[in-house]
Image 1 (cartoon, rainbow, N blue to C red):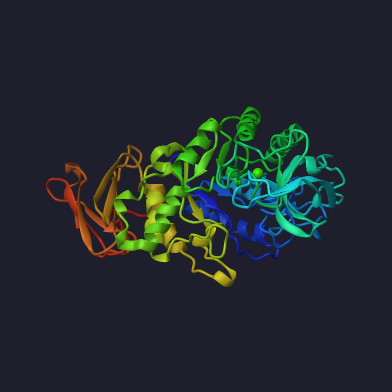
Image 2: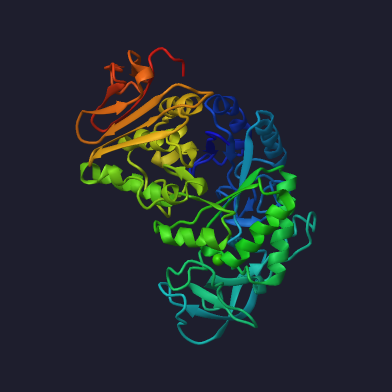
Length: 485
Ligand code: CA
């Protein structure tokens, strides 16, 4: 989709009152207006408790429909409300993506006893002691659902590991033993083998699991009329399975069905390997770019701004990158905390929204602000402006002016349908000017900065050049004076 924008429609600390689906529905018109084309919903499946974000997943077939884990609804509302929200999104001709958590399951219905061996936390290939019988929460029969939608029951054979033995009362990582049982090996090589992340880790090499998950995803996509899914924690999920799974989804739902994944690793090569192993069916969130944003927001003038796009998915695989500034995991006090400093947010959003490459994703927490203890202010007005520039003026060829360590700029030339030019300039240390060639046909035109960061306007000279000012620590985004946003 040309100049599409994804909106990540949740943050970690949203209220657990169950009003989310209803409340978010009211925000859709506004998002449509600024050019949002796809909504990424939180995990809509039943989690271990009402206040869980959905990543502590209990039942894939319960979308807020059954009285399980002490309530019918999830943190976000009921299935009926979810379907109404999805109808409203579709009614505005926006796409719907759901968050899919299939690395693990949590909150089992009963304990089971089986053979296992503890492994080293830092090297999961290293067994730490005797094989032993342990007792753990691995039995799922979903009594509250009573076989509706599926009669599949999960037991310890369907998992690779757990983190607690209630016989000894000891925590640790326990690898489940048995015939053909081992960690899944098509996973990140961090910690020797990073199959195990949390809770009861699903064994994606087990034939019954593969069939069950395929059947489920087919049902899930149809039930919610989804246009795409975001795959959670893929570096912990066997890539051989993911290749098979994504191929199955394409077969059933067509190649336009959109798949993107969270491979949380700053290292670019690992992400490239994963994309190749899954036949480039799964776009990846550009974690490398996020870390570049985070690092420069901390280091300021010490960071070389001309390298801002180096070693990123968007540079190496521009058509496969979902670019983002922050998300629910990078927020304060979260597992992957790396929150981009406020002063840099506008620059970062300018870079993801106005450049040619990448599918940019706006984060709810940046847009509306974060709630609770780690409260932040909304940046809606700032993001609205940049999104509207993307929608109306960020088109056509791009010329980069990566001038010096603390000064960069770029120019979009427009296309037939959107002929106006757009200029962005960013300086970190002090007020500077970038001279850009817009074309002789632009002479005499006056450009102004829609962010309001720079007051001075720029007049294009006889030769077609303009001197564009960047204020210290800011981005300025110029369009022709008088054009509406
Ligand atoms: Ca795993």
